[in-house]
Length: 362
Image (tube, rainbow, N blue to C red; front, side):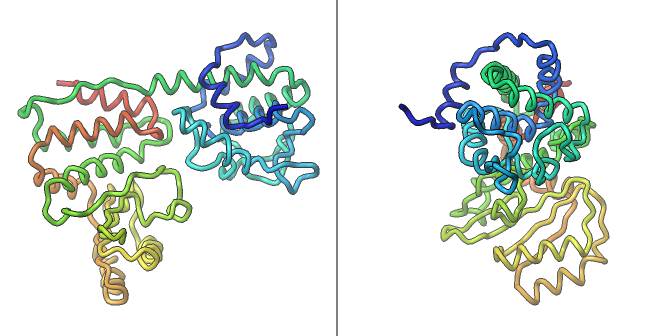
């Protein structure tokens, strides 16, 4: 008998899945709640797929007991990290950076039964999530059609994330002031959903990519690929949101982008721990909020004396505008930024549509 490979099974289902008919009105109601919240509830989505695949592989397992410390439990996190999340990410479907089981409201030492105490913020989603699990745990015959449904909805999101935006060719179309105005509109728009804080990171990453080709000091330097913005620096083994590396792999510069977060001495202490660990030559904190440099100067000088790293705190928009004046072709930056927005797997459809709308306005 052929051994069941969860990753291969899931990949096959993703490639060959179809939207099956859900015969149970109750189940269909719960799934409709989940499908409308997938982008904001990727952890719930991923865990449902994890438990479904596990139930299909081992029908005798009570998949509600998703931790080894629970009686007769299995490691849902290991199963997810090994098989599910990598396969979802590989195929461009909604997924977490590492594992859905790192989400605080879902990592608890409790079974996913109807009494699960985890504080999933959306009560409607929590109720649907637990009831779907209860239904296919009691009736495994529903597993295939539920999995087909969830994968089909995930593929719709993947296809919807492709927002075509025409490249800018006219060199006279935008001034730098125009671009700054458009970027502010993009960053500070009320999206009423998470993920928008990555937009300034993608923007600065795009600009640094241009500067890397044009500015002498960046010659022979390499820009590290952006990681998932939701992954902590500790987990991702990164010193900041953006890293520029020397040829030997040492960190030349690190950039920490703070969107509407206060920069205070406590934050500098956290940054200093990263400086000591990763040893960049320069470390930038770029913030969209006002800050008092006089309050920060004493700690900045202390870090320079103790470690040697030059810590620089700047207003994000002002520094961005200054660097834009250094590049040869503003259109190259716009097109680079646009392409990075289109390809980013964390940004949501609404973020991509908003940039398209802003660019195409007169």
